Length: 556
Image (cartoon, rainbow, N blue to C red):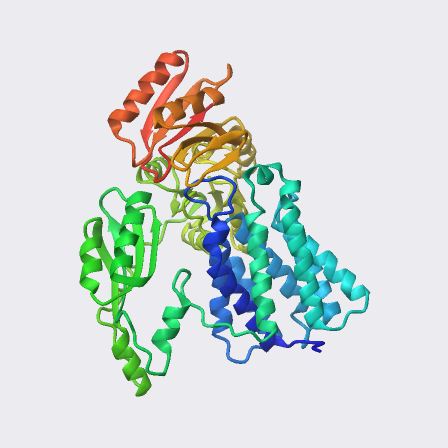
């Protein structure tokens, strides 16, 4: 029977929880209610916890205070998306409660889990039941009950808490009708359960790989490369580079590129972020990967390591040199000081240029297809040399990360305008008036974004039923502010039906931003159709260049 654990055991449990979440992230992504190609709860939670896990893995003999600092600080800065921010807040509350302890017993755990839940609920403006918060609260309720009953065996305690939290997770579809209709449990709650279950496995002494690699890199491949035995390395060259895109690179191109890399190697990681693609592959012929990548654009930050040579020289106590060293980053010219600055989250060359033209000082590449982290927000804030900085998240899944960054900055006044869509962000920055006070501008911008209706058109990645609409994989969907408004087999028809659902007699301006997969001719034809249908409205058509979403449409 184990009554207490120390910092060393807790560190192992945290790393095991992180590894278990990482291994299940794609499964968790598939639990997202909306069948969009960028469902990313598992990815966001994994990137959040891995940010902290890297720091924890580097600690040889952690004490409780340093361990808690690594977990809290790492996860807060690495937090992405609503689910990632909530996970980081759970860690923040938990570690704050235990950081001055030498050992943890059941009463301490019960207090810490309750503090974790309290902290996470405070971070969300309008907490919704049936989510990760509900699952965490269930764990806290069971933990307190066991502590009050006098339970002293941590093995029993962890087992019972996890079982009860699992029961709460299974009930989430009854709390959120949208989950029940889609036939899934809450994805964030499932992600939390994988962290808890992985941690419990480590507590029980099950064999766990505690090495932390980049998210997406296969742990077994990394282990094989580091094994001091005579295990054969199947693919000898670790190849990494960045593609600076010079042509269209949509989701289908990404899947084709990944399939090609899988045919010549393993440990494939391909991360697309607007006009940049980060690539990692283990292969016996790096030239093949490079030649394929050159079809999409120029290459930078190339790094090729001979893993077989590295393995041999490591055994002899030497370090194998990199074949191609990373190029040093160019120094940026400091921004001149100003009273007020703007940061906008954006994706797509056209939309980026629109924000820059309207006065945005710094663009964070990201948005719907890759949620930027709190760390990304903090880096942007540091580069904007202004006394007051407005942040436009332009996505409902990024607002919490922006709020978290706001709380971590002390030397500047940070104001987060809760823009949930790109059109809302454009409306907000247009309504900024330099002669007005910061407070007056904040109030005006928040008021004006409430007048913007937004619709977005993309395709479905799986079959589902949602908002009483039956959707098949490959269908096109028109998604409004509150749900799916149109479904069909043709982009123009779905887009037009979406706009009709958005329109009412108060709408005077319709703005259309067409994506990278829509030609200018197609966009002009769509605009003409809208002008014929709504002759009294002003129609604006602009190239957005956004991936995955064929059209972003707003009505004001």
